[in-house]
Image (cartoon, rainbow, N blue to C red; front, top):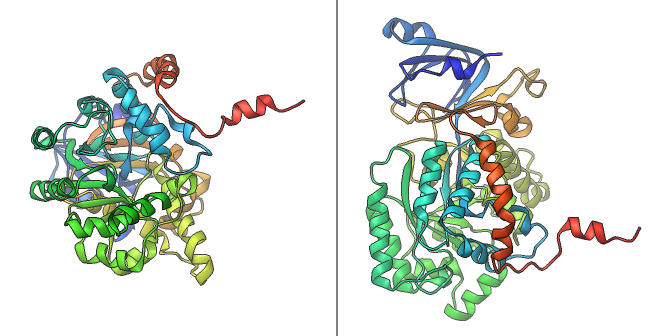
Length: 465
């Protein structure tokens, strides 16, 4: 077995020659990549790259696929301490669990939660995560610290609610000042990318929705919000505005290429046209639909209409391969079976939606999402010497259907090795987990969480003998 830690101990120029290289035109054999300064410099045959760069190390990886890292277009790093508390709960768990939990976390617990979530992301092959913003009181810097320490590329949003839904709700001028400072602090950072967010449209005034979206557009970053996820939220918007949430965003001028909508599951044909015509992107979160949602976003119809979308976890489980499988499975279950669609977009669509398309939705196409010259060297080495890939007839589909995070041998961001076989190379993940085990229960007990159902463990224990 290749000693990957030793192989990648140095950061000098290297030519990586995997058994298969996942490029935009599919998996290719006989190709290699020159890594230089944390970026993909050139792509060619190993011999051609060696001839042009005789001083570069050749790293032969015949049993591996080299592929772009996955991109999670929608997650919540400061929710990792709660995880299974939401299992089996009815919709709008953010009101009863996430807002109370996040709002009660102190600075150190925000850091621990974020670092645990970043660890899970990297273990699952996510080299980039788009965080929708923490509702804790002014601790966004600790999310950034956790990302930097683990090596996770992070799009991190400053929440700009002016009508509630967060631990603190400053006045309008202070919200906009903090938003500008957040974007300025992230500018030029090699791993951290700024973003602005409003949790859901109803917790912001029309003027704030419009201004924050415009600020994001001017800065070239994403404006994030949760829209048309739950039936009760759609109905509240109709009562308050005579418009559905997505229609209301269009009405106030908050849609556009800068806008990244989480969910869009309860969506009308008219709203699909609004997304298409405005260039707005969508985070399609299939596991969230299964676990806590009211519907499944029509991702195949979005693709057919040219609506931009990428796959997101919504903080459910951090396994990029299982996310692709869920993306295709939910489309098949909700739409494909009824229409006799046996391909449901094909394996390539879900691989694209987890990488290249996700980068576009996150406004990171010029940074990551593909193995291409000039982009950051964010990539995975996947072990192909596995029964699941033997024999291999269609590797693209096999990655979607048979892939799993335990097949990932190495994770890189900016050309730096971050993980080997699921564990970080330069910090102690088990010490982090030990501290979290000691501190999570008191933090949860102190939060004003309201669960509708008891835990499954307690119900099993209460069953009559």
